[in-house]
Length: 78
Image (cartoon, helix red, strand yellow):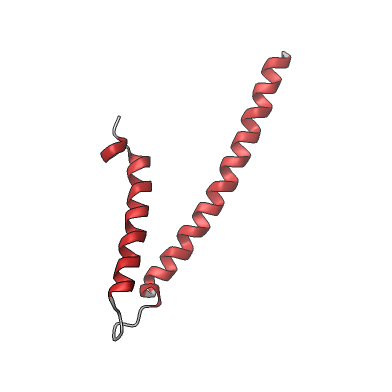
């Protein structure tokens, strides 16, 4: 194995390790959000006001942007 090939292999291994660590973090965040969503983000139906609706709208827009990037929709179409 040449030095260049060995460096490329080590680089790929480090890249994979970094990717898997971030994926684990991502999955944990998704699980937290799913649990919070199941609990309606702790919103009391008797006292929900526009602030909660605005926060959820903002959060949804951020998640939509992430989904659009991944699925190459909207402004991210290729």
